Image (cartoon, rainbow, N blue to C red):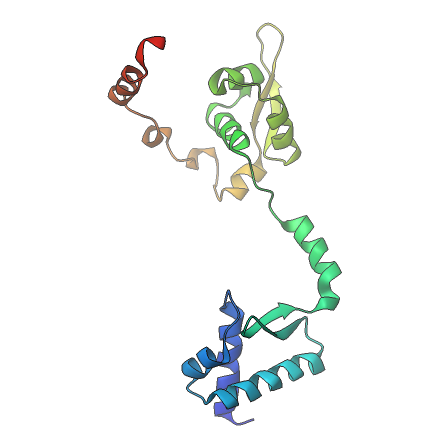
Length: 190
């Protein structure tokens, strides 16, 4: 393959690599400044070379275009990888509870319930299981309630050096005038 041919091949692979949808040969022809017939030939050659080299990906023709896809033989490994490394989405309740713990720690279940207005028991168990929150001590008051705080995993996942790097709450809190305006709109039920 000529140096110019290698550049075209590289460019085609790069386009296919970043494309979110299948790329039509006509679109590749425009971008690569090649006749559509040459693009078709190039795609056939690329697909064959990936097969011959035993790559972990294949070139597929789908939905009127071309796209790179993982090789079917790699499916069991991909399933394992995704199931082990996919970050689980957090519910709104989990995010709220995590925020209360992060900003008020050490904090007890009762304090979290008072702030959020609902029992945090199941959400706290989930956060502890995920390694974001941990027991950090006991309240010296009546009942010796368990106190919770965030973990190093929490700061690592948020990209913080420490809790001092949490953004200040002041920017997220309504002013006194805004609270009064909201309360006045709620009517006599307050």
